[in-house]
Length: 437
Image (cartoon, rainbow, N blue to C red; front, side):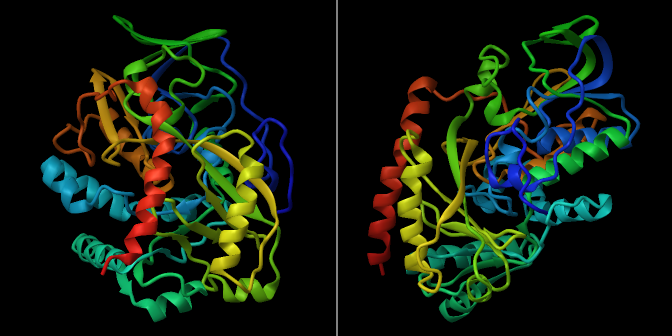
């Protein structure tokens, strides 16, 4: 794919590199559906595809355009784990439902790539594996425990030592780590747009540029009101995640307040020479390590290294990140030198204190979830089938996720401010930990 600009999206590598599509018409007037879905990101589109293929009458409402939110702005890494929620602790906390969820996560990358292959979605998909290198000796022990825990759930994982890690990455900055061969990376915006094409081909109706103003349960069904119309549906999936309160703060405030939205910054270098691509991640795996201030990168289809960084305060973020991240890459990969960045962009991700996503059925016929905690690509796609199963009557005792009451974060406005400042604490821990035996 060549670099093609689409002015309706925030500037990003994916927007520049992905074939544009004509947006669907906005909703005008009244429509009736068996299932209405708010949000045309990975979860909403995946659920719509599964439901439409099963014969349901589905309407999807998207405030802007397909993939405008987190689904079109992320790094594109397909990661079949959680950030901090460990599989054994998930199972211990939530019992059989937690074990089913851990299995869902373990299978999530393969599920996404199988979906891509089955529907022939052109999204630069590469299932070359995902690697989580350990930045300290202590984190190697964590990697070993994760390999053991995920292996018990059938995940194709193994522990690499320091020498194997250096060969895989092209750097000696790490001590070992966990390699999962089912992971990889995609162009996330191309994936979202490809899903949208399959959704409409399957018979679902998609309305873009249609922000939802309110939802209300009535005797005739769920009434979803928009600026120029409304949808009446038997069941409703709220798939807006970290953007639930972006266009209308009163849409679902308790769900919006169950997560802390954090800006995730992504960056892409200028295309790199063949010699650099042959020595830096030569196997083209996706990588995100064990730092609290995360190091993460992967190659795209045009020879750009796609990476990113974190900021406590977003002002002038694009320019402020270029120097430290360029210096970081030059330190990790001396053969690269300090690269130039052609793209810097950001988007919201939802975080929780325990790094565990939350899944809700707050009223009969209403399903929602929140907080991908930085693992949204594979997870959000797999959740589409879960919500389709719920719509078709699979009971909470048998769903692949634990359904809990909505748990709002106390003092949410303060938490939204404090959340990004935790980066300072993570950086301090990162500096101290390598000294541990």
